[in-house]
Length: 151
Image 1 (tube, rainbow, N blue to C red):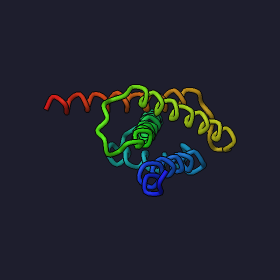
Image 2 (image 1 turned 90 degrees about the horizontal axis):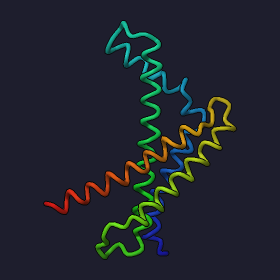
Image 3 (image 1 turned 45 degrees about the vertical axis):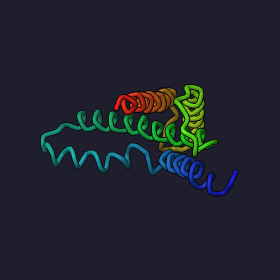
């Protein structure tokens, strides 16, 4: 593999995985992210309850899980397809499945890592949400490709 190929296609994957890993530390703990969501909700509605803030925070955090793994899956898919970047390649479900599989495996290792972080907890539900985000990104990419072909 040439250095240019590595920097263009594989380094973004590694950097994104590093960002996910960093978010799995105490930095991404619920008590730290609530410092942002709570004040915003209280600014929008001063009468908002703590229960509502906790629910919104939960939803935002889970959507964040899906989004970060959706992006990871797209980056992995792009790196997998870098074998022949100059040739136009048709959609290939094998590449998509491989990208989803890699994303799901990384989600599993990420949750395993969180098991050892005191302020975090490992969750199979989060692995499923992460994998769901990866799957959704591949279906969205596939649908966008179909949509652009019609134009």
